[in-house]
Structures are given as C-alpha cells and as structure tokens.
Image 1 (tube, rainbow, N blue to C red):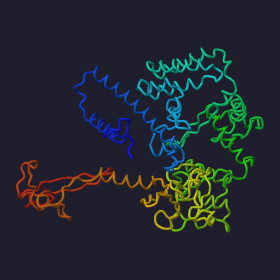
Image 2: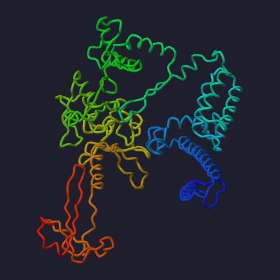
Image 3: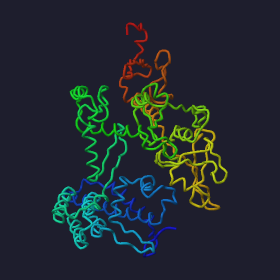
Image 4: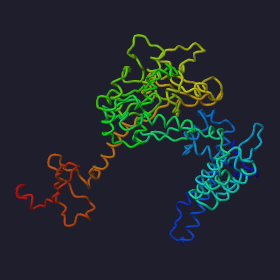
Length: 553
C-alpha cells in the first residue's frame, strides 16, 4: 500500500512524489543554461544547493523511519548502518548517522515524536540554509561542550552556533566554535574524566589501493602517556627498523650500544615512520607472547593468511587475512619464513575442501578450512563484510538443534547477527550449500516468504573476481582500439582476395570519396604490422597498370 499525505487526494503517494521529483530533475538537466545571466545563474545554483540540503534532510527522515520500524532486520541487514551502505548506497554512513542523531526526529516507545537533539540546527537544515558540512562542524562543537555546563547555556550555545551556520562557512564555524568553547570553559576546569572517557575512540579505516590504512581516534591522557612511553624506547633511531636486517629489536634499553649506534647512523626514517614500526613490533610481540589466549572463535590468535598458489609462485597479487585485510604477496612470502604452513586442497578447482593436511579435522582445522575457501574470510550472508575472525560456525545444511552434522561440507562462516537470523519464521532465512556447479561449496541464503507468496531467490556472498574480469575487459578494449574499420561484405563493398589483398569486384556504389576512380579500377591493400598495432598501404590499380610487372609499379 502506498503512503499518502494528509490530504489523501489522488496522486499524493510518496512513490508518485519521488517519481515527479526525478522527472523534474530530468527536465532540469535538459534545460539550456546559456540564456541565463551570470546573476541569474548564481541564484539558480544557490537555490539548487538549498534543494540538495533539503533533500538530504528528508533522506535522513526516511532512514529514521526505517530504523524506528526495525526494517533493517526484516530485510536481512546486519544493522541500520549496513542497510545504509548496502541497501541505500549512502556515502559516509557513519557521518550520516551522527548527523541524523543530532538533527532527525525519532519516536519514543509509545510512538510519540521526540524533539531533535539540536532543534535549531535541525530547522536550519530542513530549510536548506545549512548543509552536511556546516552541520558536521556545529555538531562536533556542541558535542564537545562539557557535561557540567548548565542546560540553559547549552541551549543558547546550540541556537547561536546554528545561527552562525546560516551565514558562515564550515572553516569559519570551526574557528567560531573554538572561541565559543574558550568562552564557556576558559580555564578547562569544567572538563573532567567523564567527558574524556566518553570521547575515547580509535578507528581503523579501510585499505586504499596500496593496501594502506588510515588510523584516527582520540586517546585519553593515560593512554597517550603509555603510548609515548612505548615510543620512547621502541621508536628510538635505529630500533625495530624493518628495512635494516641488523637493526636491534625490542627496547632501546636492551640493545647493544655499538650495534644501536651503527643502526642509528643508517636509519633514514622519519619519527612518524619509527613510531609506526615500533607499534608493529609491539603487536608482533603481543601475538607471539601467548598472552592473548589460545583461540578466538575457534581460530588461533595468530596472523592467519591465505594466498593463491599461483600468486605465490609468480610473486604477484595479495593474500587475505582472517580479519579480511589484504597483504601484498611479497609480505606474505616474507612472513611465511617463520610461519606454520597449512595446505588446503580443493577438488576439481571448486570450493569444496577435501584435504587440509592433517589426518583428523579438528574444530580449529575446520575453521581454517572454511577460511581458506573463496570469500571465506567474511560472513557468508550476502553483502556482509564481517571478517572470519568475528564470525561463528553456521550449520548451513541443517541446524545443529535439528540433527545437523558438524561436517566440513555442511558448514559456513556467519557473523553472530546473521547466524541468529536463520529460522523458519517469516522474515528469517533458510540456508544451504550448493553441491555442484560454479557455486559448489558456497552457502546460499534465502529470506523466508509469506505462505503462498513466490519464494525469494537464493543469494550468495560472492565478490567479483576482479583479476579475470579485468583481463577479459582489457582484451575487449584492446580489440576495439586496434580494430580495423571495415564495412560488411556486400555487392558494393567486396572483400579482397585472401592471397593477394586485391579487391576484384566493383568499387562501392558511393564513390563520392573515391575521386577519379573508374568502374574497373582495383584496390591493392597491404597490412604492415608495428610494435603498437598495424597500418595499411593502399594502392590504386588501373587498367593500364595491369599490364605492368608488379616490381615496376
């Protein structure tokens, strides 16, 4: 049933209004802007930006409505953020969630609307007077106000910052916000440990095209002091240098003074690079110390990497860790020197594991076997990116409570959220394992439909095989770039003799581009290959030339 507005009139459904909006945008895209004066075009562009801000606010309202209905679970998404990323294709979902928390209208347990956290900012956003960038700065400033500040002062600060946002740029708002904080707490006496503990956080960003990751966050004073103490002894010049095989490892206090001095002379790293290498050395020490425990969700608490044998032989490509991170194959080979190798062999190039390298498959061996399968580094639910290190073992063919067996060919990784969503009720999932075909060994998921309704399709969590896809696409692109233009053979455009390259039929009927050719003339075409392609030598053979020796022509 379509949602309608309060008028209840015809054509008032939300779907119709959104369709009209898209039609209006299509019409706007076709509008010629050249007749507009500079002043008019500036006004139009400004109005367009306000419209974008207003649409963003309405989009937040729709996402909040889905969240209040708990719709993300019904549609099989792990969380609201997962629904935003996969289902709605929202850019920067974490920032958008923070924006919604501050400016959107949520509903209470009994359905009553709750006022936005920052109502004045929400009003400006709804009007299009401020955009996401302005809102982000204002929210950051207001969230930094110490909790001990009186309520009326917080309310006034919100109103003032929202008013500033209507006329100032985001960069200017940052400066204004700093001045406001200095005015509210000039001596820093209102900020206490409660505020600091609420703001502690560390984020590890996604890997970029070079497999590098950005780390951001906020440390408490105590954590910063601990970090600086570690850097002081582990990040000293010459210490823990991965590019220097003779560099001392561990603490500077335990290093040989002469070796340390020599390594320091060779050390060309910046302080930031030494900090990075010190952190990596500390992590390796923690992983090998045994203090982190023996296992986590059935996997050993170690660095677990899977790699394709072809990539290892060619020393190209990358490996994948149990936490779904990529490692260049050169790093994999280097790390393998001190690693315990596990071999997983797959039958007939399918994804069915047949032999793991041990006579008896223990639970840890089964986990490693599942991880070694294609896309086994993540939860098997379609679209889920939770790594294997955070996943559980799911009895995909038949639930264990119903007599399912813990056999390797009946298991699949599933994150706790999706593992609990398997069941017989409407909106839950039924799962299974493909036994043959190109998807053999993969776990399929199908959302349960209402009785009598058509069944939902089976879906798998299968990412594109980028390497073969790119190679095939490159071959098609090259074929298009280097293709020789030719018309299809017909009476007017005959093909040349395969042995001589001579057109023996009449020339094309459209002779406007062939000035001076007689109907009986022939064309001799010779293809010459080059390093980057080929080119044609075209000769015109007239009746008189036919009598000449080819060497004299």
